[in-house]
Amino acid sequence: MRILNIGSPVLNNKADKEVEAIINKEIDRQNENITLIASENYASPSVLSAMGSVFTNKYAEGYPKHRYYEGCEYVDEIETLAKNRLNEVFNCEYSNVQPHSGVQANTAVFLAILKPHDKILSMSLKDGGHLSHGNVMNISGRYYEIHFYNVDRETEQIDYESIRKMAKEVRPKLIIAGASSYPRIIDFKKFREIADEIGAYLMADIAHIAGLIAGEVHPTSIGLADFTTGTTHKTLRGPRGGFIVSDKKYSTLLDTGIFPGTQGGPLVHMIAAKAVAFREALEPDFKKYARNIIENSKILCDYLRNDGFKIVSGGTDNHLFLINLEPLEMTGQDASSTLASHNIVLNKNVIPFDKLNPTLTSGIRIGTAAVTTRGMGKEEMLKIGEWISFVLKNWQNKIKIAPIKEKARKLALEYPVYTY
Ligand code: DSN
Image 1 (cartoon, helix red, strand yellow):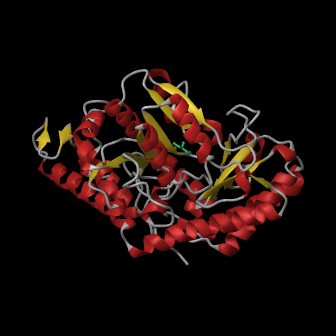
Image 2 (cartoon, rainbow, N blue to C red; image 1 turned 180 degrees about the horizontal axis):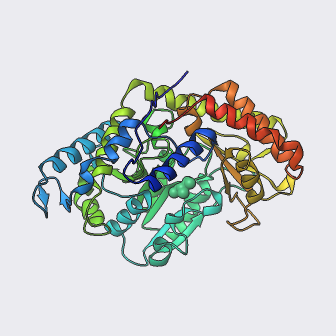
Image 3 (cartoon, rainbow, N blue to C red; image 1 turned 45 degrees about the horizontal axis):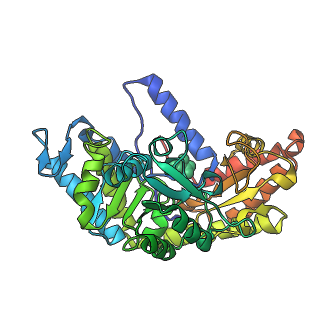
């Protein structure tokens, strides 16, 4: 059963044969590989077509009705439409659809409410956090005083009591709830209680789970977090980009945090594509897609766990899960590159209490949003699970695992994404 009929977008560039050839190779790659990268998905032809529209020609610094350029009447129309649709998707009062990415959205919130050296309490990168939540190399880690909370060593899940204790000790101005590799439900209500106890702001970064919240299969952060940031291209299945939603009272602060705070001219063609994606997220079918993502994730995760793999936190509640490769004495780098050469594409990932660095890692992250969009279900998850297991358990025996490549390619081609 195909959830999204992707059809055949025209992606050719007849005038530039060199570029056309490379785009066509990428279309082939996307068609021939099983993508399990938890942050990737396939945008619909309508989204792709809006991205390629004439709005790319337009400068529009400012916001609807308050621009620094003439000729913005239709830009105003499209941005207002995108904002209204996003408000409807998340049932919120205010949204900003201009962030070029999730990192831009997060940085704009920080600029809006924090001063340099203010304290942030966020999840450690190894435990599932994101680099824009305070990594030392990121602007967040350089300008603010970061304190990280960890998952519990036994359960590998968020320990709300230890966060409460830390929050009382550290007294951060901002607490961040949200992750890029956390496989469990995030209890935004508990985070709200903790933030209220110390008078801190709460920001929810829902980049990964935006589509799950929109599809009503993960509890929402709206109405609980002061600010919710996210990306449009992961489970939400739109164009690459970011957004911020919040209560109306923060609108001026957040708008200026984006422009002129951290960005110049908005990418209006991307805003048009976001509007299309938000419309798609409001379709009844989107809820079915969201449910199927989680169903697929659980099926694949259960298969691998029952086949002897060590799963971080023991399972999954969302679109992703992580395998701890320590018992196999292989690195995440070995696992991801071996699987990729057999047409199963995923990423290496640090895991809680990882002894290896982010270029090697002791884990891999597996996500099911993209395969769900392609229409894959239980039968395909079981096959993919069997192939992942076989490849990882025999990864040094190249001859033995060689046949998996053609099997995975064949399955991927049975669920084509794009044609040209
Ligand atoms: N890099 C993204 C991911 O893969 O999760 C997050 O920004």
